[in-house]
Amino acid sequence: METGRGIAPLVVAWYCLSGCASQSIYFDSLRPVPTNDSSRSSITDVSSGVRGVVSLPHRDLIRVDFTSGTDLRDMVVLEGSILVVRSYFCDRGENFGALGGPGVYVDLKDAGRDKLVKQFLFFIDVSRRSSPSEPGFDLSVNAAEICFYISAKSGAASYQSNVERIPKAAIEHVFIGWELH
Image (tube, rainbow, N blue to C red; front, side):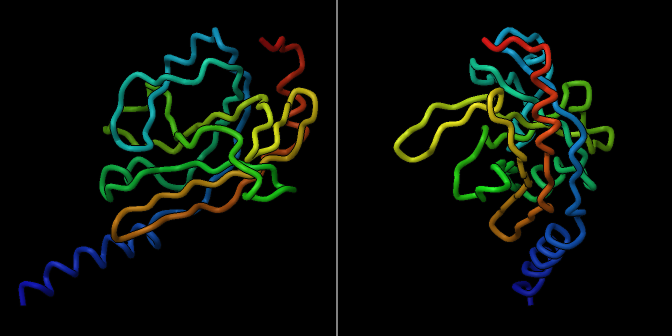
């Protein structure tokens, strides 16, 4: 009978991760993050539950802020999952390649466990050179609608949010008055 007791918590954890957590995410805003922007040090990665100094790539990025229907940090802390953001050009599909790193972040002011957090962010590259496995792009020259979603997996459960869209016009707008490095 002890075996049955061990399985029940796993079933409940799987059910709540895949069914209790809201799968809704909503695009909020974009803003440029040049290589010398001081805001690069005011965030923390919540993808794996290990907080600390974030080392973003030394290139121009676009910060994407979004709202989640659930505190995504709970999936990492309670379920032992790793959060991953997947971003891609909507018209080319997921197989084109990611447009930025997989990390999910929060502002340091929101990083404490004592309050509910529903505001998260991630970064996309402004441009990327072509490689043998992926074509290049430059959003400052050729903006396009971007799709993204969040996923999390642990040994017993998985989560995937809805797919949200960043309008082409929002991408174009982020470059008004911004000098690329």
